[in-house]
Length: 238
Image (cartoon, rainbow, N blue to C red):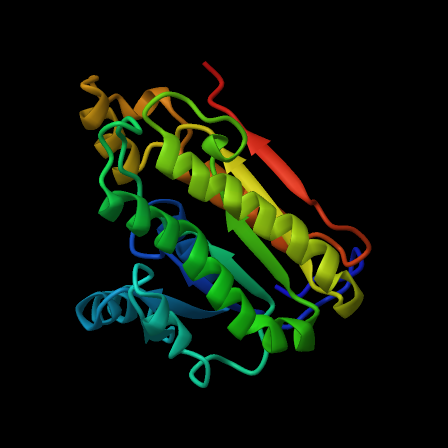
């Protein structure tokens, strides 16, 4: 929804979301769709695009694999002319020590988690400027602190923080707001994979519900236009 002053009525907004097929992105898309917002969903394949279109009737889908920057670059003339928000919720993780991680693991995580958001944001900036919209980057606690075996993922997420900080300063004059959200461990398929890589039992009830993070994103999108929430950290309560 387009930010307004308190008590004002606004038309449904237009939102471009990555990672809407699962986890935080899926819940966010459900929340926005339920309240009548216009969705543009980025899918990694034509098959996934068909699934998203079925799940969110009326939504637009565009196809690009975030692991392939050239595919993201090709979206330039296929995006809407006006965007109230761009939410980067897609991401990948592969744990391993610096001594063990392959070049491919580094390239994939940096490409998906950092390069693709940078390219997509650049392409979407004219539409975001037109709406004085908001960019939300769903980062990670790993974007603030790097732990053993998290080097590649944390490096990509530290880079995402730098991207957000620079973008915020660059686009303030155009009215574009930029928010980074740093969720701690969240009960998603990615978290289940992480536990498997760590050799630990996975109990989703022990971690943040994806809906909690989605609600935080909605709070950011619904802020009145007189402020920007630059950084927001969420941690599991336990």
